[in-house]
Length: 283
Image 1: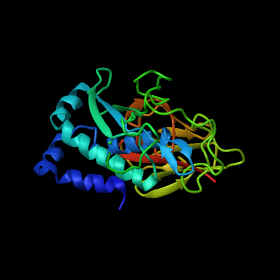
Image 2: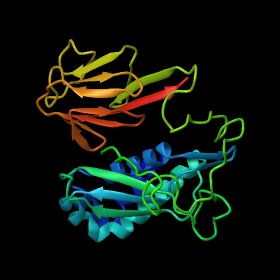
Image 3: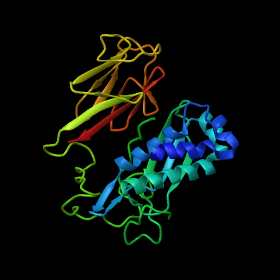
Image 4: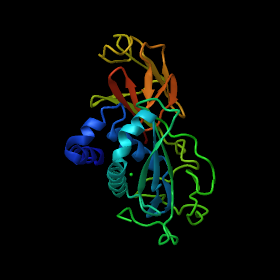
């Protein structure tokens, strides 16, 4: 069973169903959990063959209405999200510099149903010698991260030991190749496979553009009354992007209403009442 599914099942039984009533807003716990997973993936730093370090301190920014609704349960929700991050890190063989913490904060610039995730790596007093295991010691696109700010959310870690000049041959976890500098862009000679998932069905992206809509002329037809005939278009590249084509109801990418957005592996696109998952992989 996947980490997110286990998280949902644990949450359903909390506080005699209180969370089911609280989360009637657009922001769902599993969306936040998925965003935390992506935050780990996008900020994974390879130390050596056995150690890939990910953030352990997270801020989830919510709109004022969502924050007021969820803040009474922030402690318990934070614990559940932290446990989810720990489980995911164990599955991916990630390690942490210190204890995992997830905090909720209010952001006045966000509308109801939208959120942002920020993260940083904080070293505990017992982990100065190096990263520890992923055991006990948790949409929108994450905002640009400040570089090198002392104690700020971003990289390099404020309290982490200096990074080695270069990772040893063989890269990081298992047989996975080392990420290019900056964590973006394909490896030399690698071919990127792209696809989308809609209601459990996979649609390969084998052309420079892919039109999604309700029309039978769309490349991928979505039978949803909230979807326009030519709703949006995915454009492959480095990076891939999605563009609204003047639809009636617009698009939401990773929790953020937008007309154009950059896509990354795991991005969640909402058109009408349909959720689309964008996927890409090297090889």
